[in-house]
Length: 210
Image 1 (spheres, rainbow, N blue to C red):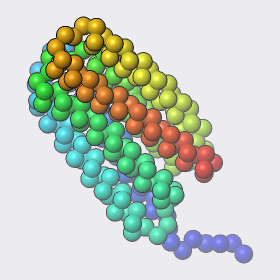
Image 2: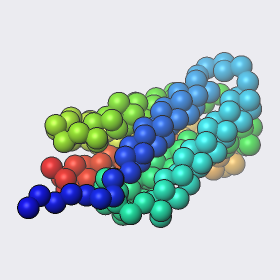
Image 3: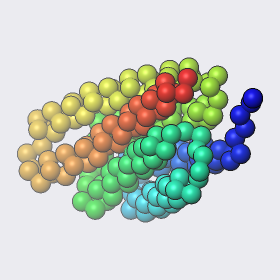
Image 4: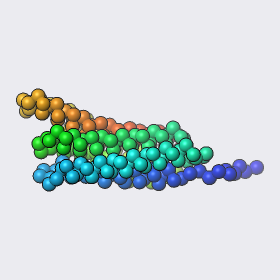
């Protein structure tokens, strides 16, 4: 006898994750623009990124609220929670990088900072492009290919981060400046690390449901 699901699965989660990655791309692009040479008003750009971070928080809260009230979910509950919180953490580090640049009144961003910001943008873009594929098992292979690409980008970010640290100690004699730049580089590196964590979460979901 066929089994029928009397309670429909709440597919709104997919919509929320796609909104979240879209917001992440906007924030990552704003950070990359902020780190360009001669960017006109970095303080205003940091405020804008903060508003995007708050929007991301609202999406995360909606995911968790919906998770608690949904009887049947399209993905495992722990996977939904992990994906939501990890995406939120990527946004947090993007905002932290923007805030640090302005709060410490730092000089023009270094080429390495710009490289890292652009890698963050690439990772965010890949995540947004592939998120709709989570709805369809026929698209799971695409998700896995994108996860491999994001892993490559994170490895690239590691190399840039290491080069940035070496160049910082070679060229900067002001201890305070070293501290500022190390903190900024770490926020950028953390954003790429968490982007890879999102990819790992997606990979786990796909392998579980394939």
